[in-house]
Length: 124
Image (cartoon, rainbow, N blue to C red; front, side, top):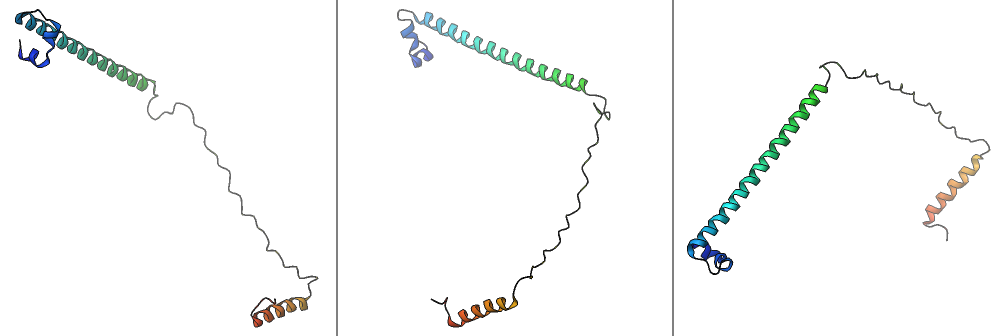
């Protein structure tokens, strides 16, 4: 039995009546299959990678070919016209309407306020 087969214990179970040479041959064959499969998988990955790179390069070339000559815009651009700023609205200051207000009434309110502060309360 090979050291590898002894470690895994798979060769004895898979080939119960096989000789050491048959087991070794089977193990080498399995190793060859797995290495070959990995190599084919890696080759396929590289093929896909190269295909993606080629497609990207072709897309860049097509995009560059579709661009107009430098300095010439693709379409004429209309100038953007912004509206002129509006002048600030001039609002006259409101005039106090003192017509119909009795000046004595204002003084009476001031007297009441002064009398409340002198007494220290709100008159309750």
